[in-house]
Length: 377
Image (cartoon, rainbow, N blue to C red):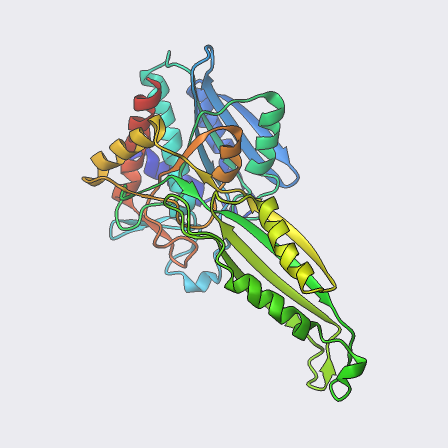
């Protein structure tokens, strides 16, 4: 059994449902310390974070591999062909929760880092790994919090490689070079409850809010940015009423989210939305949650090296994309880092019977090692 396959299986056996780490990071730290890495545990609230570094004796670049040890819940265990936390090989696949998202990538990070420092003990700059147990959850006490610590310390990061499962059909067919920002809103519109037969004695918050919501939904926010799609606002929930059809509700709650490109910041979008709401003279309160700003890595050493390495793996140049949801790279990019995402095929992530191709898993360490050699040797 290959080293990366054995380590991935050991990680899958840890029931690290977010925000639990369940011993994953202790296992990783033990291995990296034996390879000469300095490992620091950063625990905030219920969240474990591991920062492992090697080198740093000069002013050379800092290359970080970024990942997470937490996984989403398995759902009903009986729906799985085999137990989600018992790794099983079948028909060339490794099955288990986290196999693709992203314990396989984290295991490959460790194997590649071990191999790199063994072959290049006097490499320039710093190679490092940062993993958290709060990527699949609230993402408050994970990389977001660690990034604040890094700012206070003056910790520089030049290049960041996230191991999110980014490939589409085969390993290396897609290179993610950015992600959209995410901004969520919980809005309460207040009216006056009353009988539907006497609308003059009430104020219907649904009727008041609909024109404003329609204007926000219909707005064309921009034309897109580079490879980013246009900014989008989607209403995800609307709730009002007592359940009776003869009562005008006194309150309306609306949840909506914007996925936005680098044309905007979260603060700018908040102001734009509130201008529309104010223009319609709504009596409302709104709570904003800034999930993360967009980031984009332009042409440069990291993007070029990643493209070349993936082309050598896949046999052709990868698609360079800014699609998908969010990742923890959104907290590292504001530190001044160029960020890319490279990982296995994402077809089964968060699903029942999550799996990764064993051949892809066993190719990942060589991929990450080639990238390190290109950037740091």
